[in-house]
Structure formats: structure tokens, C-alpha cells
Length: 273
Image 1 (cartoon, helix red, strand yellow):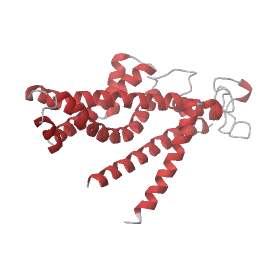
Image 2: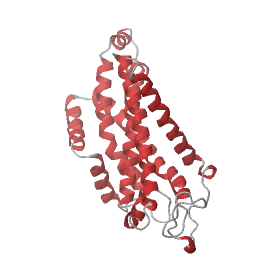
Image 3: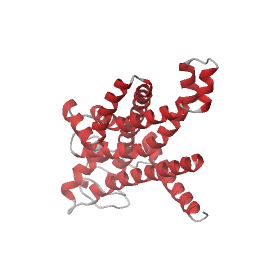
Image 4: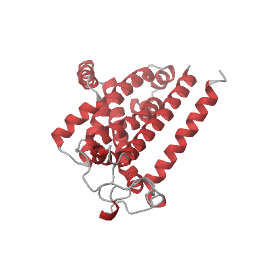
């Protein structure tokens, strides 16, 4: 049992360090950036990484490193916002479905099953196709795509906790149903769903970046990782750094969030065992 724990601790420290740097870049990019991310310089186009430009420059002469730093706020922000909204909507809808009449519950779960049958990115793509491109619509699309997972888990947790002995005892002594749910059921539902949401943040960030890569998110000259990756896809042979570093930022963030989420889930399962 002593073997996996040090490895898990090391992975958590590494992932936490990466996420701490990303958080600083998202909240206060000016502390890390070295240039104006929107400043163009035709004399410095497609320069390779150097002391003056750590990640090189793009086709407009903009500093890639500074654009990656400033891109963290928008890319990570969309993922966090979409996950938070999906968690709230999922918990409310799942809890209501669990206590609703059987016919309503069955109808709601069939809708959830249909949505879960498709990959989240495909659902988000369809929603953006209906709403139109734009950062706000991307966040809405990613939220809608992520909601079914939280609805399913919240419903299952609500039903399980509602049948617990302490909840039944609270009902028997006359505690109002709404108070019982808020005090004894909802905290357990939120605990279970929040662990899943930690992993879901990475999925949402990846989905938002994918939509931006397809040209459905923010537009130029916005510093956003998916958009930067798209702008550099035709320069892979001539100037690979234009796409390489935004791609690495996406990968490092998604992997780090997934590592933290999976470790938290493993710890939650160990406590529940």
C-alpha cells in the first residue's frame, strides 16, 4: 500500500504546480507576460524562440509566449464557467427528477440517455451550430453538453441519500422535507458531483478549445489557445512553435486537472469504502 501513495503525492504536487502557474496567468497575466499580446511587428514575423521572444513570434510578429499567458484567462475561464453552470443545473435537475413522479422522472432520464449517447464535443458542436459562433455561445454549448452527466449522478445520489437511515429519522421526527433535503441530502450530492466536476473542467476546456480551433469561438486578434492553435496549423513545417506552445498549454492544463480530479475521486472512494 505504501508504493502508490508517494507516486500519487508526487503527481498531485506536479499537477498542482502546473495549475498554480495557469491560475496566475489567468488572473494576473501581466505578472508573467513579457510583451503586449496584441502588439504586431511585421519586422519580427515568425521568429524562432529566443531570449527576446521565449516562444517565438507568430505570422503577425506577436509574441507567442505572451499570447499563451493571456490566453489562459479566456480558455480556462470558459471551461470553469461551463463546468460551474453545468454542475448547478445538473444538481437541481437531478434532484428534482429523483423526487418527481415516476412518469416525469422516466421522461427526463430518457432525454438524458439520448444526450449521453453522443460525445460531449458533438453535442456542443450541434449547439454552437444552432446558436452561432462566439465565446458566449461556446460557453453555453459546453455547458449544455456537460449537464447530462451531472443530472444522472445527482439523481442517483439523491435517491441513495434519501433512503439513508438518518434522513428517514429526520422525516419521522417531523422535520420539513425541504429542510431535510438541504441539510442531509444536498451536501452529499454536492460532494459527489464536485469530484466529478473537477475532472469535467479538463473536458470542458478541451471542448471549448476544439470549438475555437474550428473557428466557432473567439475571433482574431483575441489571445485564446484554441484559436492560436488553429492559426498555426498551416505553419507546422515553417514555424512549428506557433501551434506547439498553445497545444502544450492545453495539454498540460487538461492533464493536470484530470490528475487532480482522479486523485480526489480515488480518495473519496477510499473514505467511502
